[in-house]
Amino acid sequence: MTDNNIDDNIDKQLDTIKDEEPEVEDDTGGHSVVKKEEPVVNKPIEKQKKPRSQKQIDAFERCRKQRMEKIAEKKKLKETEKKKPPAKKK
Image (tube, rainbow, N blue to C red):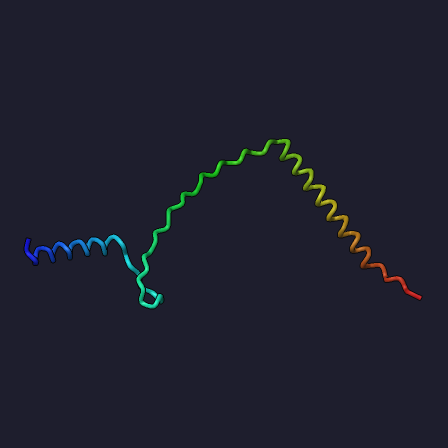
């Protein structure tokens, strides 16, 4: 082998090494940093929720009606308290 042929082989090997390991320069004071690849995370498949039964739906509606009635009662109490004049202190 001749010196010229050896130099060509070395150049080819250096080129392949440079292609395999990309170097990134940033504010590290001129040092070279090898960028790491982040692993690809696959999202797990979410199971579908079971549909609510008719009893559950009915119970929910009853509770919603009761809440609305209690809220209406509280509003009436607040309105009646606002209408009353405050008691005079002696």
